[in-house]
Length: 178
Image 1 (tube, rainbow, N blue to C red):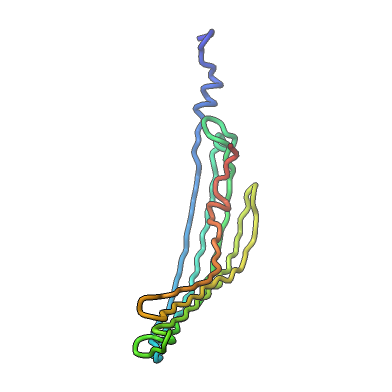
Image 2: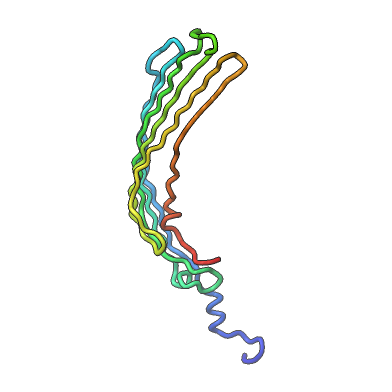
């Protein structure tokens, strides 16, 4: 009824708005690697490997109208769609210089490793807050392990890595809120 404390139908409709979404995510993935002991050296076995990977992700996010305008108990959310395509390839190698029965004073063991990976990312996406294309990144890791005496091992490494944004971070439901 009317009067103090009565519910306004428009206020009830606002609070009870439908907050649903349509979301579809797909992933296509292929990977291949080949690695082996390559040959024996006085300090141990030289090992090497190669790898390749292909990945394609796509996503679409379409909130219901009430969700887009922030009706009810949700913050406004926008729509988004896009795809990422990754082509990655690389190699790694492990070279034992000293070790096993092949030692020298101050060199009980010495081992060097190197790995490199190329990541090519193509991006087709657009949202209100982001649009972009692709990148190509070169990552690496090199490592040294040296054992000058039986009770001491010294390790050193240097690397550069890359973290690609996920598709949800790029085109997922952005929310305008505090």
